[in-house]
Image 1 (tube, one colour):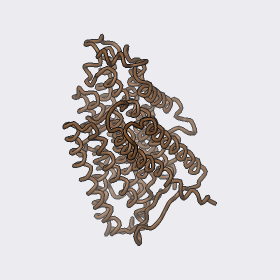
Image 2 (tube, rainbow, N blue to C red):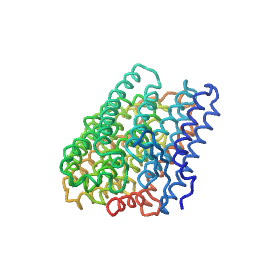
Image 3 (cartoon, helix red, strand yellow):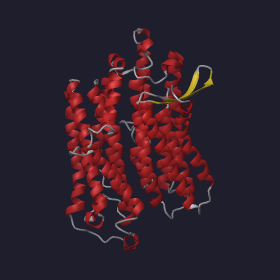
Image 4 (cartoon, rainbow, N blue to C red):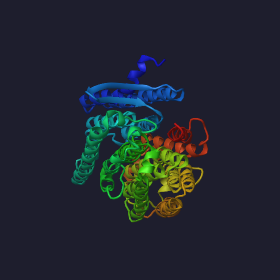
Length: 505
C-alpha cells in the first residue's frame, strides 16, 4: 500500500522553490548570506526529495497529486520513470547552477530579483517534469516563459531588453498555439485521453478513422507549440539572441530548463499522449524526423559562422537538442534510448561549456573565440573542462556524448533509417569543425593580447571558487556518464528502463 504522504511529494518538489522565491523577493539586497543559504538549501532539499521519489519508482510505487479544478479537468502531478529522468537532471544541475550563479553575480545589483525569478524558473521546470496531463503541463510551460523573461533582461541594457522582446514574441506565440492544441484536444477526446500514460491516452481512438485528420493536425500544432522552446528550425530565432543574458541564465536556457522543456514536451506527446506505435501508424514521425535532421545540420552550419563564444554554443544547442527529437522518431527501443539519454547527457555537457564561457568572460574579459589564444595556460582547469565538454559534443569516447550518438546511430540502423546515420556522421564532423579550432586556440596558440590586470589580480586560483568547482564537477559527470554507462544508476540504465516500458508495456 502506498503511504498517504506520497500525495504531497510532488507538491513538495515544486513548493521548495516556490517558497524560496517568495522569501527571496522580500529580502533586502544586502542580505546576501541569507539569500545564498535559501537558494542552496532549497536546491539540496529538492534533490533529496527527488532521490526518494526515484527509489519509489524503482520498486514500482508512485507519487501522485490529483485534484479537480473544474468538472472533468484535473490538476495532476505524477512521478513516473520519464518524469523522474527530467526531474533528476534538473535537480542535480540546478544545484550546480545555483552555486555558479551565486559566485557569478557577487557584487552585482538586483540579486534578490534575479534569484527570486531563478527559483520560480526551477519550480516551473519541476512542474513540467511532474505534470501528469496536458492541462497541468500547459500551466507550468507558460509559467516557465514568464519566469525566465526577467532573467533574460536582467542586465537592463538595450541589447538585453531587445532580446527579451524577441524571446517573448517567440515563446508567447508558441504558447498560444499550444493552448489552442490542448483546448481542441480536450474538446475532441476528453480529459482521460489527455493523461500521460505509457501506452498513450488515445487508445480508444486509434481505430476510428474519422479522427485521423484531426489527430495529425493536432500533432503538428503540439510540435509547433513545443518546438519554439525546443529551438526547432525555423522556430529557433530567440535562442542565439538571448545569449546577451548572464552566463548562469544561458546555462539555464540551454541545459536545464527552457530548451529541455520543449524537447521533453515532444517526448511526452509522442510516447504518452499518442503512443509511439500509433504515432508511427499515423505517419507523423517521419516528417518530425526530417525537421529534426534539418535542425541538426543547420544549427551546426550556423555555429561555424559565429565568432562570439556564447553564440557558437547557442547554435550548437539548436543542433544538439534535436538529437533528442530524432531519437524519438527512430521507431524502436534503441533509438529511444539514444534520444532519452541525450536529454541528460547534452544537459551535463552544455552546462559545462556555458559555465566555462562565463569563466573566461568574468576572469579574462574574453567573449570572442579569437581572444581565447593561450587561455588554457592561464585557466587550465576551466579549459580542461571545456575540452571535455567539446569532446562530448563531438562524440569522442569515453564521454557521455559518445554513448548518445552510438545508440542513436544503432537505433537508426535498427529502424532501417540509414539516412539518419548519415545525418549523425555529418553532424559530428561539423561539431569537430567548430569545436576543435577553439581547443587549438586554448592550448596551442600563444597569447595575442594582454588580459585585464585588475581581473587577473582579483582571481584566486584561476577564478572564483564558486565559478570553478561547479565547472569541474559537471565536467567529471560528463566523463563518468560515459565510463560508467553500464552502472545500475547511470543515465543510460534509466533511459533503457523507460524505453523497455514504452515498447513492452
